[in-house]
Image 1 (cartoon, helix red, strand yellow):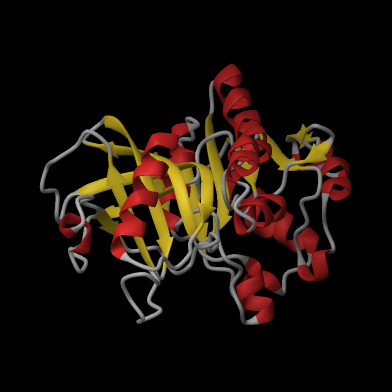
Image 2: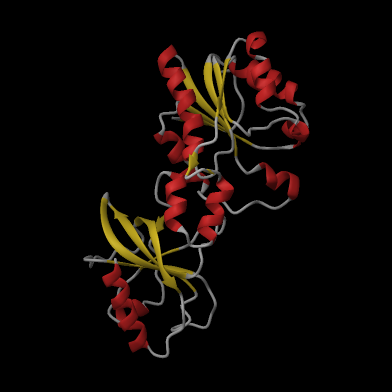
Length: 298
């Protein structure tokens, strides 16, 4: 997949439009619509998205994301997209009327064969354009428009907001079901205070990306990917009140059946289920006993 950060002339594409935070099952349906049409008609597909959520520009505050920008790109690439355009949502773009955005940005640059969006996609100044305009202009501009209906689980519409709410409550299983994959934190293992090895449970520590939605402080059942091999594990996300009073958040994972020194190496921690809330124990012995129970539960 080729990545562009500015517009260019790249005609005859099948376009998928949206911010796609989380690249959840609803987003996947939109992107697959463009990829499938391109495959069937012998042209290329592209996702048109933005570097930051439009809310960052309008409200001055960015929402907490589900994926880092790097992971969002990886998930989009995995769907078979040929190009991704990651544009700056600036005053020049946001002040365009819906018709000007459609004509001057999408049509003039891409001459699209097709355009796919979600059912609730809006564009142009004051959200003046949406599915009605894209439907209306198909014949004039020579593209086929696909409006992807709501994707649902148990009659509940899948959305980034619903997933953020589930993650914020520790409802990992519901969030994962809507995502279509496990919520995951990836990064290089960093050194902590090395207290885990002193109590018999070595941990691999990651920095939690500050731009992501915060999970509740607690202990989680996880899968750890290290060099393409998956291991079961338990992760504590929180401030470790039994052993620290610094109130600094940490993400510490004890990998089961694993005894390698992996400082500085890349791992991915995929969350499966919240086991319990974080709490302060009266002693290290009580903490060790609870960790043993937590390990048995996974």
